[in-house]
Length: 348
Ligand code: ADE
Ligand code: ZN
Image (spheres, rainbow, N blue to C red):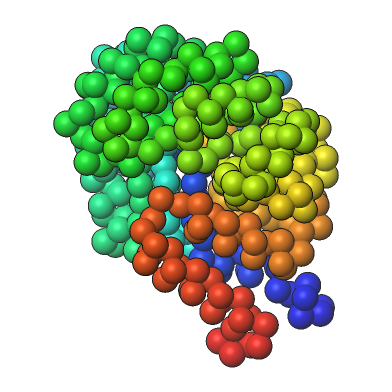
């Protein structure tokens, strides 16, 4: 095997220091943990076994996934459940050398079932603190509003989260995209920014390029989550390229939810070649067949990504993160050292 091929092997990807910027913590609920928590909480599941749950994860579009996603998370009731969920993700991420994670959570999916906001965020936060101390993973929390619910409900959620803003870096927008344009949430995002929170939004996953324009102009987002449909609009591509707006792309998610027919048809490589600031992420790893490494590996194999492509994707994710300039520099140096050592064989 040539050095070039060896440089992008599975082990090379696994050992790379990396950042994950698009992961829904509730989407990391593996069926094994779902069964364990359901058992101790006395919640009954529609599946007879873990295998049956996995077999049910066969989706036709975003909504068919969301239906199972909201159902699965109903086992989460107590602070310990949110802790265990987050800790399980961090352990997996750590095994893949994720050095920094910016994690979405969907408070309305819990508060609407009667679980207090405080229970949700305290469980997640305690695990994140342990992750920093025991695994060396830094993290940030992004609170998402469910766009299939009203803008008023989002505003109420924003206000009720006030005591916990110290733990939240940004607000986001997720759930059923088509028919729920970003512009509907302008007032909530204005309010969040007024209080110093950053903003991101899912746009251009299933929705049209117009939703990406709205996320930029109305919600003033720092990043677009997914954004793959931007390629349909050359003016939008130009804007995203010029301003280097990061796009948190999730290859396996897009194939599982049929945004692309196959990984070979995914536009990730095309987007990189257009000069866009693209990153690779897992979205809902328990449902889509893989964590960040499996996403890199699928894209590498399916699209023939080069070592330089992979380097750019990882570098983009550190640069697009909400870390301080000093921490970004430290991680970027670590990344450069990793690539340099693997090329010269110094550290192997
Ligand atoms: N919530 C969890 N995963 C999502 C996705 N891929 N798109 C929109 N909302 C989500
Ligand atoms: Zn997502």
